[in-house]
Length: 137
Image (tube, rainbow, N blue to C red):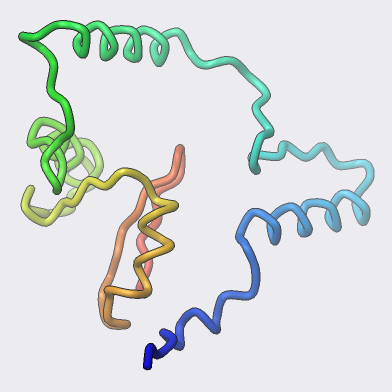
């Protein structure tokens, strides 16, 4: 018989629902305060030109045989891992080896599965746009 991972019992609700409820309550209690909502679907500005340029370059690379890369390695491309080590860790004086970096398809899927695979004594770093977190699971 399958057993439930007991850690799932500690999850009260979907994160964005909780954030939306807290924001709604804050606005009600503080009608004079301006709130910038960065929750689901609240996009207030178009993409930066540098982002659009990088995306166009990436699409162009995928359209040519000599620069096409396809699916990346299961732990991420070495060039990306090297940049993560350099700009996210070494510039903050954190000594980390490239083989200690894992690049995934995204935090949502990782968070959904992380309780299934990690022991409570692990320390995990995951990234979100403009927010990096170091958490003890």
